[in-house]
Length: 209
Image (cartoon, rainbow, N blue to C red; front, side, top):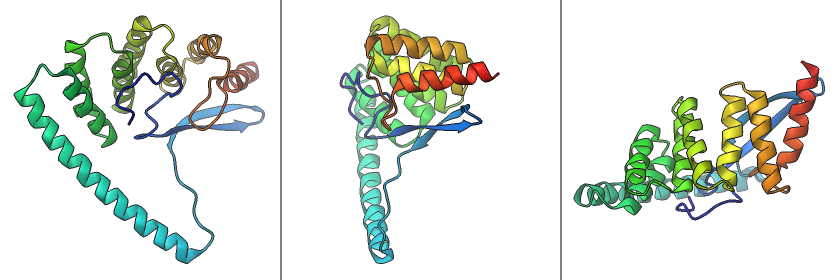
C-alpha cells in the first residue's frame, strides 16, 4: 500500500494487491483479461523452496498480526476522532489489504465525506466496489476520480478493466484506454504490458467477432 500518495504510474496499489493483467490469445484474438495476484518465483532446489516457503509463511503471519493490530488502533482512533479523514483513509487501506471489501468501502466513504476530492481514495473505493461485485458503483467512483483529476491514470486504467471484465463493454474499455494512452503513450500494467498493446489486441478481437 502506498498510502494514497499520487500514484499516476500505478493502477492498483502495488504494495498490497499487486495486480497483473493476464492476457490469453485464442485463434489470434483477445480471449479475456483477468485479475491475478502476483506470485513470486520458486527456487529450483526443493530444500530451498521449503525454506523459502517457511520464511514466507512466517513473514505473512508477522505482517497479518501487524495489520490486525493497526486496524484495532485505527478503529479506536476513528471512533474517538470521527472527523479524521486521514485515519479513515488509512483504515480503508488496511481493510483493502485484508480483502475486507465492505469495511473498506465504508471507511473510504467516511474519508470522502470529509475530503471529497481525493482521486486516489476514489479509485481505491472503485476497486473495492468491483471486488464486492458492484461494477456500476466502481465506474461511478472512477468517473468521479477522473472528474477530480482528468490525468489520473490509475482511474482510467481500472475503469477500462471493469468495463471490459465486468460489464462486457469492449468499446467503452477501448475508448477509456485510448484516453489513457493519449495522456501517457508508455502506460503499462503492473506486469509490464503496454496498454497500447492491449488496445491493439482488443481491436483485433473486435474484428474477429
